Image (cartoon, rainbow, N blue to C red):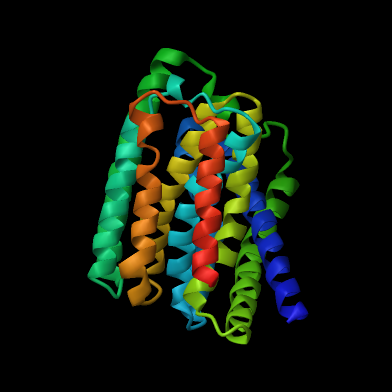
Length: 316
C-alpha cells in the first residue's frame, strides 16, 4: 500500500511538471512561428493547463476504470470553488466586489447544467462529447471576440500576459520542454490511475470516490497555488477567473474529448448526490459575482469547512 500511495504521488508530480513543460514548450514554439500572443493565450495555454486532467481521463478510460475520469471532473470542480477559493480567502480577503465576472460565471453555470443533463442521458458517448465540444467552441469564440476587442483598445501589453512566454528561450530548450511534456503526461497519468485503482480496491471504496477525492485534490493543486499567490498579490480577478476558466474546461473540453476514447458510464451516486453538490458549490459564487460581496475570511472558512464536510461524508 505504501508503494501504491508513493507511485500515485509520483504520477501526480510527473503530471504537474510535464503539463507545465508542455505549456512552456508549446507557447514559445507558437510565438516563434509567429502565431499572435492573444491566440496562444486563448488556445494553447488554456488547453495546456488542463492537460493533466485530460490525460487522467483518457488513461482511466483505457485502463477500464472510467469512474475515475468522471470523478476527477466533478471532484475538481467542487474542489476548485470550495477549496481553491476557500483557502486563499482565509489568508487574505479577496476583493471580488471590484470585478465583473458575470458573463464567465453565466457560461460556467450553463456548462454545469448542460453537463448534468448529459450525465442523465449517460453513459456519455462521442455524440454527447460533440455537444460539449460545440458548447466549448461557443465559449472560446466569445472569449476571443472580447479579448481582441480589448487588445484593439489596450495596445501591446498582450505579449507579456502569456503564461510561460520567454522571448529568449533557445530552440533546444523548446524541444526539450515539448518532449518532456509529451512523454511525462501519459506516463504520469498511467502511474496515477493504476495505483489509485489499487488503493480503491485495498480500502474497498469505489474508483469514483478516489476520483472525487484523491485525484481531484491532486489535480487542483496547481489552481490552488496560483490562486493563493494571486490573492496575496491582491489580484482577485486572476484568482476568480482561474477557477471559473478551469471549471469550464473540465466540464466541456476534458469530458468532451475523453468521450471519443470510450463511453463514460455514470454511477447512480453521481446522479443523486455529487453532481448536485458541484452545482450547489457553483451557485455559492452568486453573492460575489452579482451582489458585490468580497470573499472575506469568514466566507473562506465557510467554503473550506463545507469541502471538509463533503470529504468526510464521501469517505464515511
